[in-house]
Image (cartoon, rainbow, N blue to C red; front, top):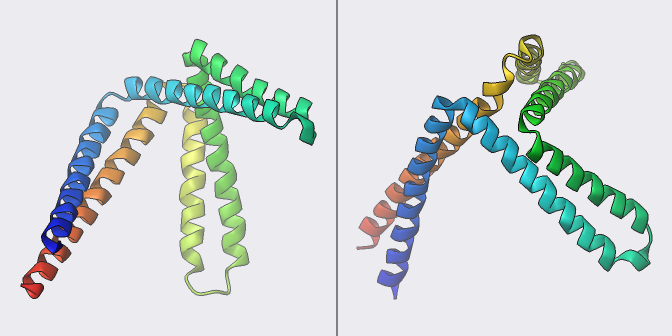
Length: 188
């Protein structure tokens, strides 16, 4: 029984390691082809909005006797219409998403700075301050380079995220493999 369980654990660790390596490769490809990955990310986002809108529509019809039916319908329509607009006009969607990202980062940076100064008497408050400054700078970089950065920005950021997810997954898998091998060696 323990050999079957240990075999399953080894398979899961190896599978996780393979997925991590695959994510690293996909992250590198996304960074190397940022325009393609930007269009892919924007289209994926559009499909998610459309699917969510239809799910909200089903929910609205199933709960129409509980109140707020018209608002639920309007909300589902907003999701569907936004998703269709992003799907039909991907370049406009990329510009819009880039501006939204820049606005989000600028707002987050300001809030982080406010939080940092409110935390100032506490130890290590400067980490929050540094995070706020970096986030503010990233948001400003997006805004000041817009629209020239739109074709590659989102794809590059998605690629970096996928790359680091893969790296962390490989690291965790190797740590799990090492710990598993050590536990097998001590139990044998």
